[in-house]
Image 1 (cartoon, rainbow, N blue to C red):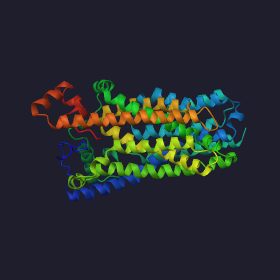
Image 2: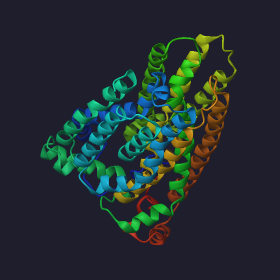
Image 3: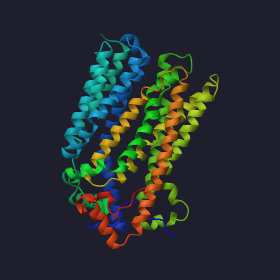
Length: 451
């Protein structure tokens, strides 16, 4: 029996036909143009954001605690403070981002990131650094080498903010680099992607539907549980490596680079393969239907990453400390395994909330819960130099998250099967149950959840 269609394109009223060779060629050219104009700015913004989040962890090895007369506990609170502020303002920022011009709003945020990181260079005590981290989290949601890190990491963001203002389009209708044909194709492509649940308007009534949707909180828990070990390992990475050997602080910082390079490679590969099946046409999918299609489900990619993370945690906990090479290799596995799931989680979540309002509000709530997990993650590595308790906490959260991922996939698959067997009358009742066509969104009987 043929498996249900795993993508949520069921019906649409546009002239967009993904199986038409002309459309496929035009779409490839369109996506290439989007990549050339938008992706460099977004990649640089992500790079700057990640740098600015982690600069404090590198500064610790450069003498941050001694220079600002801070304790280990105060340092961990500085790590968590960023995510506390992120939690508080993330939903309003998501709403503003969707309601206002993204080019202006993103430029302001990036400029603020850089300014705040530069301000960290002028802090002289725990309170000053804590305030800067709190404000930085809200926005991203006398000379010595510590201070120089803040300047080097903060200044490029100010330049990037100016580039973003001129380069980023607000929506397809106003993108200057599109021809009229490309603009029409992009609008139709986005409409087809949402199928029967397409709704580009903002609706405050739908905000309530997100708050009462069980998927919001299940995805939130999956994100939060992932962020506890993810943020914990990432923020503690310089200290974990420093505790493995007798090398200098400079060497410890240099050794944080290879694990992140490994993570970068695996993030790209898994994100590409997990989305590949969804980009295929109907005829190409049928070739995979018999044997391979179920392994392209995003849930399975997340579970595979979690298996690697469990192996990594167990290895670093039980490999004897004298086997330095093996332990360092394990660190590379851990960083890759706890970072690789991010793009897949985001793609899976956004695919299953349709419409401008529901997707924006759901993203805000889910990332708020994600921020709580990251704040907790900043506290779990409190037992140097081997951090056995921190690794144990990370291992337990990975196992719990895996259980939730598998459970969610089973539930979504059952909902899809139920919708497959609905009669026309049952579909009408289902639409009415959720307030009519304007409010039903991804609860529409013709919508299929990505697995």
